[in-house]
Length: 431
Ligand code: SF4
Ligand code: SF4
Image 1 (cartoon, rainbow, N blue to C red):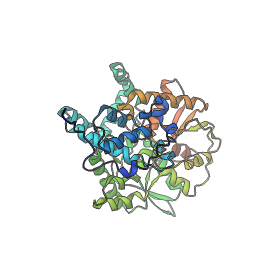
Image 2: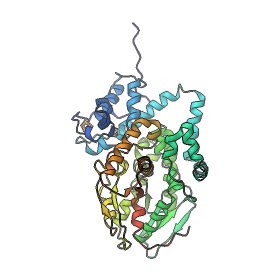
Image 3: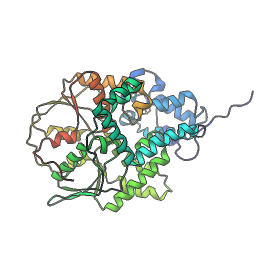
Image 4: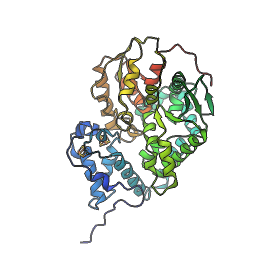
């Protein structure tokens, strides 16, 4: 019988054996893994996935074997496992290169139309933000005219349900500058891709809150999407291209801190050094850049804020974005900020840090599991009796919002910064 040649990891972006070898197979991560909780299957948990990555790394399993591809796709990259691992396994350093390897191997055999569609979705949409704004305008038109119901009727129900209500104005990075008296420093505001078209009000609230915290804010026009979606989709080279753009924009700006109000983007921006090999001149620049990246909630928790005076009579529960709690380990700051708002009652939901099923484009690539996790999250929220769900990431806001609407709940989803900003008497910012 001819010997079967197994495809292993090759070239750049190889999962590091030193990382998977630190797994002691204790299983303490299993109960923090959303897909394991849903399936109770070893291969659908972190320990099983690490074993699969090791098997490919050691040449015992084919890179494109269906079981491997399925598990690398079913993983949410939510890093719930990483946050609880006693051995310090940096799971993100395994899953992302493993996906990049699969993607590269698949691309070699992909038909041209499939490649072109992928290039449109990723490159045009995420590197040319004008395209993103054009798509958002079409979506807004569909929402206003009721065409969105037609999309549902045509079988695009999940996508139509997921889309947030698009506001009339995007928050476009055009080189704006918002100065305050006696500033303590200058913050660079990252405006992102989805955030700038679908959550412009969060950016406006962030500018006001940073100003109250004594920071000038600049919004340079030469920034772009963080690249996380490209990397999650296995397009590592495209992700690096986006990273270089943001690093250079921050260096040119002269700002003291790079502020981001979307947890998934913040996590990616802080991990830019991992995207460049040590011999790449961009590695050192990425290290300098990432050391200055902060989530807006980290900054607002660290600065001195005047006490909010406008009460919010609401029961609020906090949905932890995985990339804030697990990847950036920011857990207490959002709760401390919410506690400052007079009248607000914070009721914790069970499993707050278990992923809601959003995870970048996961709810598009893995709709069945995404729906199961969405239902699980909505049930957890229902336990609290909350009429407001606070979060800090656009993906979570869309996924939880869609789940609440589907369940007939009137609860609203709001960003923590927006809720905090509502605690002050304020004027709309002049752009
Ligand atoms: S907790 Fe860490 S060491 Fe234990 S099985 Fe999970 S990844 Fe491996
Ligand atoms: S990243 Fe999330 S989904 Fe993937 S193995 Fe870890 S806990 Fe499970």
